[in-house]
Length: 471
Ligand SMILES: NC(=O)c1ccc[n+]([C@@H]2O[C@H](COP(=O)([O-])OP(=O)(O)OC[C@H]3O[C@@H](n4cnc5c(N)ncnc54)[C@H](O)[C@@H]3O)[C@@H](O)[C@H]2O)c1
Image 1 (cartoon, rainbow, N blue to C red):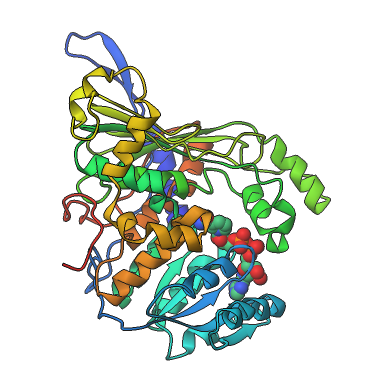
Image 2 (image 1 turned 180 degrees about the vertical axis):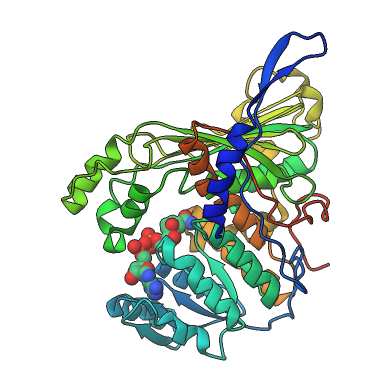
């Protein structure tokens, strides 16, 4: 029985578990609802977790790119600026996209890369080469996991655009392949490297917010300028066929890093709710001339989670309707608060702010945001070591203001120095599982659903989330 069938079997069982409970003084106070549980496949014999996985240092990181649509060529261009790399091969179904990406290399004064095109299976020839260390995947979502799995089987590390997995089955397949082959499998979540996010994470790790209790994230991005440009309409098709938050990772990744997920805490339960699909069906009529009444994805989806240690997370998704872009990024702690969208703000208990950084810190209050000048002084003071090192070049090279370069740079830095990567395959699974688990919740009246422990018992092995550096 596959995971999907198994979990459907458990749904029936879990719903039977809804029972009335009686409090000590016999007054009926609440109903106890057992969360729906999905299957956790046993770790195959002889296989170990890949927590803090390290692999031999690479002097030069040799890369092959697969998927050269709107996103992929930007990655090719960024890698031309990263020291210690060699772009060996380029692949896309469409030959003209490969040729165009090769022009980026020529303009950068680099030799042309080998070209692969013509089918959705041609990536296998790229992965079969023996002169590539990592396969960088920026195709549509349904091709991510199969390409990454094939790449790891052929001895390559895999770096996969977001969301790297579209189902629980794909999460487990990627985990099992990474554990068995001992190859890195990293999701290319760029937003964890943005300037406000990384600075705020640094503040959090230094205790400025006290105990972080609640975090919010979102992907609110009206995609009307893009719907017509996705290859074979893949993105709208996916939304049409799936419920749940299908693009959670930009908001959720930074939240999980703040809460040390699988580094001392773990995701435990999730509930999800969605609005009706309203704009979605109209888009189907517009872009495929079909009746969109079968459209599954609600225009606005909310997913709420609780962790083992009692922290809460809210993630929202709307790519359909008019709204200013927002990834939300908001945290509430016992000593402070941070918010990125629509305006960057911090609020602190006055004693949290060092008077060397902000002279009149006693004038700060716990019920209003610190003035802009204080915010700027604090952000300067708590600039993350990664940004201290490469902020300037990152902003010059660009990619969403620089965060994309920071992401690629860190991937290469860790591979060249034999360090654990900033994000592992369990991050990938945790940040992507929200889609199918949310769909299960929605399809069962927003019932709670247990989040599987993708580390299969290793979530408490590491104490706190930390980037690795050469000592
Ligand atoms: N992290 C970010 O900020 C960010 C931004 C944009 C897109 N993305 C992600 O990047 C990925 C690509 O998005 P896009 O906007 O470029 O889509 P796109 O439709 O423009 O490009 C997808 C490309 O993949 C190619 N492709 C599909 N299947 C393939 C296969 N089997 N082998 C080789 N090539 C294949 C297509 O020919 C197409 O050129 C998606 O996963 C998306 O979510 C991430």
